[in-house]
Length: 76
Image (cartoon, rainbow, N blue to C red; front, side, top):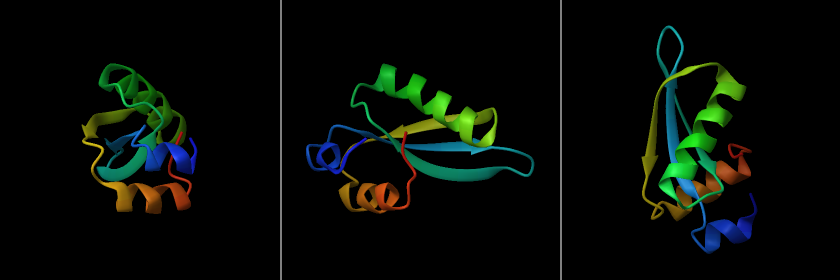
């Protein structure tokens, strides 16, 4: 994932719900296609936090939030 992908809107904004008690995290994956993004999001969330309960994908119009998540290292 690169900053250029964010500017070109070549990413997917995602969230994962996991754990007990349930925890909610937001992150980016470097794919604009929803089918591929869902697979990559599941792999990233499982690697980072364990098996997620739910993965949500959001539209790519959250550019400012995407920049902040990228700066925080919350991307695949």
